[in-house]
Length: 288
Image (cartoon, rainbow, N blue to C red; front, top):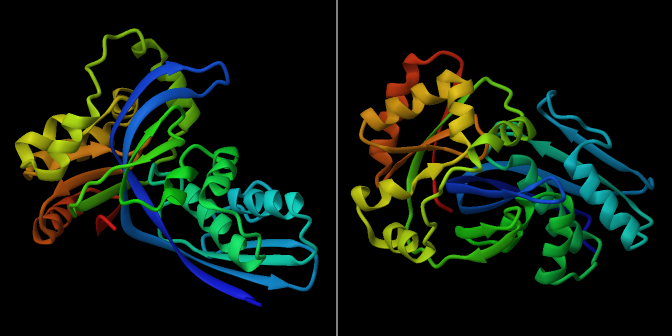
């Protein structure tokens, strides 16, 4: 019987994100294209004798108790399948917290996958995605296990996209706390605006084989209308990356900004160029 599992938990970016309407459940219907990138947290999941769930993290800003999405995920499986043993989960955090990069959602997906093996629950992909939807909107993307995917409804209805391409990115994360519910609430006044058509086939063609000029129109994020106006540093980073020749956008509700490049060298040079900004975490990552 397996007693311990080590997992890498990747980040994501939203290459494009369109907000369509407010839902009766309080969430919003969106269309987005996710890209999985090789910026990872690391999770150690192991069985323990005591009938408890223990969650710890090397980042003190991450709560370790019942409010942690990883704890919630483990308890959901433990209760549903009447698991008598306990589990200890330690998170080695590298993905910036609450930054629009899906770190918590990815950790939850890793716990679903890890405990499915550790506790020999034997859930198939369809069942795992049902659990993912109960936990959070982005969790399903990480269960899908695809480098690129289309997300619709809350962003939790996932369709893999056959993009056979690797992009390089410089990621810039300001030291800001951005409240996703507040950004969506503030976006309400923009919902009445006429939206350009979200043509997945055209976007897919551009991402698969287009050059920068073909890709650029499809890197957008409706929520930046709020976040980049509320937090001027976001707008300044986006503009700086564009001036350096990268295709730039914001991920999620922010504050993370990415610059898309076809080469690692270009991304690394752009990363060095961002060093003039204070209190900025900078990463170079690629599609994975």
